[in-house]
Length: 331
Image (cartoon, rainbow, N blue to C red):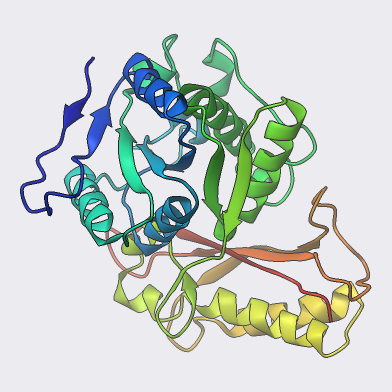
């Protein structure tokens, strides 16, 4: 399918129209033109429902590369049958408008979003992709040893799906660098190992978590499901992680002391407001193998992470998971 410019009548004439690609063939033809022009390409893969966190990744890519490619693809392979694939927010028109507005606002000398990749499921999974993993057929990618812990405990299918779709997207886009947020820190560790072990010429760049409001809640497309009551206490996870960070910066070296500071805060989150907050994990690992640490040496690099499930407070609500992390710096 040929590339198609999205209507951009509201943009200044110096901003090129956003080229939308729905096939790998079309996207590779665009990528070839960048190669011939000796222009590097930064890539920001997303599942849509764009927010300020996504836009910050695109700005970072545009700062470093003359051409930026953004993908929007809700990847079925990272959802289990009981998860929220059908309910995942889909806001394509709004997403495109945000990308066009961002393009128009980027400063002179920065790169621009020149390609938006919108593949159908059949384009990336030509053999089909049933949600039941034992029924799936074809090539899939697993990064052994990094995807079974933390998020992988409650979502054992997740990182197989992430590694597989990112392999497909990296092969399709062939970017020089791909940009991800620190909020999904385990994902970034998995993908760094993926490109290293599979000899992919892609640099994984990790940008700081973007937060909303004074309580520091990490931005996520799923935050829209919280509602007013749960949103009021949703920053409790970040507050708990900051308490643990404070214990570490204050000289604590033992795991029990550092994590205990976080757990003490979490036990009180939502209690007075009548919001049930279930702790899934609070973890303290190294930054390479994601192995749990018993002591800290103060040199930094350890990852403090946590996940909670905000339970429904009213009719029609569903549980909402919140994840967050802090990377300890050297004392």
